[in-house]
Amino acid sequence: MKLTTIPIEGIPYDRLKIDKIPLSDQYIERDPQLVPAANRAVVINPCRTCMPLGAMFATLGVHRGIPFVQGAQGCTTYVRYTFCRIFKEPAAIATASFHEDAAVFGGMKNFVEGIRNLVVRYWPGLIGVVTTCSSEIIGDDMVSFIKMARQKLVKELGEEKAAQVKIVLINTPSFAGSHVVGYDRASKAFIETLVHQKTKPNNKINIIPGMLNPGDIREIKHLLEVMGVESIILFDISDVFDAPLRPPQKIPYYPKGGTRIEEIEDMANSLGTIALCPHEGGLGAQYLERKSGVRAIIGPPPIGVRNTDLFLQHVSELTGKSMPEELLDERGRLLDFMADTFHHTMMKKVAIFGDPDIVVGVTRFACELGMDPVAVLSGTPSKTFTGDIEEIAAEYNCSPKIFNGSDLFEFEEYLKKINVDLIIGNCKGIDIARELEVPLIRVGLMVWDRVGYQKRPVVGYRGGEFLLAEIANAILDYKYPDDRTQQL
Image 1 (cartoon, rainbow, N blue to C red):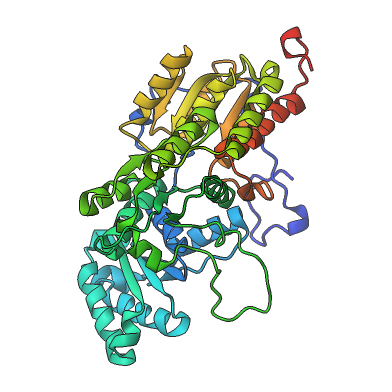
Image 2 (image 1 turned 45 degrees about the vertical axis):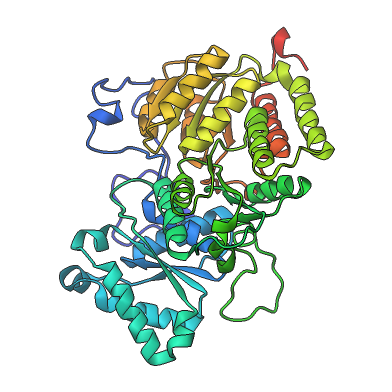
């Protein structure tokens, strides 16, 4: 159906099909001055979303935790929609529901009444107060607001009941940073607000996983269980965003998963903290080290052979336990699989994009597979991303183009000028892959067009096998090898 204008009576659903008509049969090169994101005042096809999403993701990883968004309804609706698309699970998120009057008079009334209604109706164990651009710009004094909300709860419910609901303030102005920074800030806010003083050692280790999928969290638990190590996983979303369906269920419904509040309170007594993703939890691990003297180990995410080896080495250093035979066998199976498929992956030119920690981990794994990273992009600006990629490139003798904090428009324009065999990233790269006629291997949080993806790990040795199978099968499925170096 080709329309120049939309008729006033609208378009019936049975006739609603929009054809994309290219302006030209051939690629028209863009103005080179406008391609770099640094030269533009606008972001085109961003590879990130706003800070509050990361803070809400973290809060939902706490048992009976509910985020309360000090902002407009859209700030909540978009995040709930995004989580539902990815995980096919409901996400309980409350909002102060800002309108014009809040922008003029401030959000105190909305906040105090909203907290009261949330507690009375849902009885959460914890409320993560997440600020937004609107509340930050008008200058809401959130510390005072929380005190007033507590006073109202004490007046209506009594001191004992009001004290049962913990409130954590997470400042996340949407106009700065990204979801990565929001999660990082949440890790510090929760530790700063909830963790008690050090008392008696618990012989556990703290794990701050970052914004990984439920399958990744379960794989981390598997590695620790095989090593015989107890842990406290801050923001454990494994049984929140992948909860079992076991009716009948009570209302209000809370998944049985999530990190218990008493576990967070006990983190100062642990042997150490491992933040798997430096940009997503490193802030919290470093704060706990300063506050309570708990050793902090920052990254890298255990993707691929070397990084998983490093993670288990760190666990061994903290606990004194050696790697058992079961994990050595898992490592051997991954190495065997790499040897079996090396003739498919070697020399393949790959472009990688996403959040900085995942991109660094996947880039190293791609090099371990004999692939050639030709372009890597971090959607979130990072002080360490460029150096990390350059270190990997020097080790494996490759020279990828590095985009630090850029957008996918600049990334795509570069890929159109070079040869690339496949792309590794999230769903935001679908149109780029189709345009270049190469496969897209989905990795990262923002994957909503694959059923069950969130249940499968990419971390650990077993996750490496899964990711390698995805890569090799995509290569074989998309274009059957016709040269002798890639024969089956």
